[in-house]
Image (cartoon, rainbow, N blue to C red):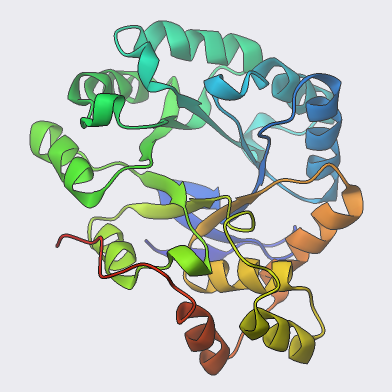
Length: 273
């Protein structure tokens, strides 16, 4: 998972997602809908976000699409992620076409299987994802909420690993074995709900935040970026959007990273090789 620093937007760190540049800090849109979602995405784009994360299940793709169009930004400058829910197995292509229409896009940059269908890998869906990628309807394909075993099953069936695995991930969820297992497979680890799943009042985070003169939110985001984890964060307020984006310029010391790693409540490794 090679990362680079791109100019602009706070020197946004990026990851290689299936051969495409993906910003490591993006704007999440759940559970916003309607005009609230459109206005929030427009504001996020205006302050410098370029990755926008939505999903069929969020029921806000049309609102997100309206913001993408209204922004006036070149499509090539944007990274749009959406997700197919597992109850759409068997109608993958139709689901994608509906998403593209709602978003007003000819392609999406990343399309994810939102959960393992019925707890299984979803090989038939993965084959349809591969077809969509090969036809240029999506640039990269991935999964969400998958274990290493399920990811390996997709690879064994098709020879292709997901470009991304989006999971709940914060200091309490930290699992070095799981992260390393994804890295060895060339899968980018993406975090959803990094702040919601974190005790932002924890004394360790409070101490580190105080010494850096930043908020615990900033510290958690910077910690994720240090580990090369892609993060999506949501806010409807411009000032908080700007504050979250500023985390790309915050560099934590090794001792602080180790202290935050130590907040993990995960018992053992989920890596499975």
